[in-house]
Image 1 (tube, rainbow, N blue to C red):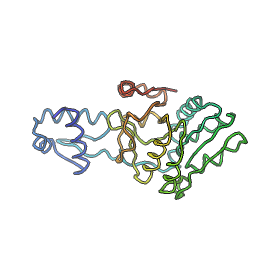
Image 2 (image 1 turned 45 degrees about the vertical axis):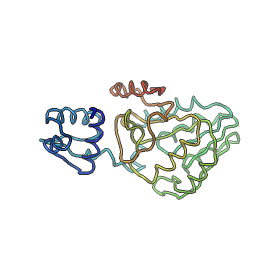
Image 3 (image 1 turned 30 degrees about the vertical axis):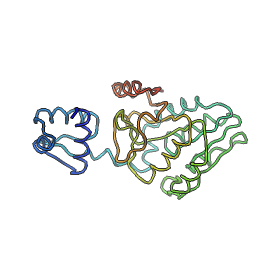
Image 4 (image 1 turned 180 degrees about the horizontal axis):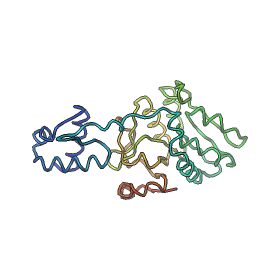
Length: 254
């Protein structure tokens, strides 16, 4: 078994058990404890698990997202820069998707002067702000999540399945060069996946705290992303950014 595959299986094993000792992992995977310790050190650096004395546990932060009100106040300046750079990719006459999120909503001030723009969104906050005679707004429909004013569910997914758009600006809880885009809440995943299928070009927006993290549910493999925009704060995550580039992704820091 290759080291990369073994580390992936270690993560899956520990997430299922919630915790495991080095001795147990060594026996289960048939390798020396020294090898397991080296694997665990690398896995911990990726933020997937947390080592303890003699073992490893699930890192509690990898699958728990703060409330929308709290997230909207985190990394605000970075999100504004990311959003401004993302808006520069939008041209007059484009048909685009704006996913729900605390970064995509920051794009609004920068696209209000676009002409003949069509915006599809599942975010009531975004739709309410896009008041311009030159912007056609299409709201997906679906079940309303009151905490964030986001629409999801089968009605949103069905509507998105009938559209063909040029660009989708997608938010995510986590982005990793091996595990791709992942999300903590399964209820949001199908609609985001429908957005990705509906667009020709996928642009992911995420601040530096999302890089190298992995949440519970797979949203999309890394090769489905065309462009990744993050903040200049991601300098410490350069090894991950290099892996994204090696996968053919255009990486932009703002």
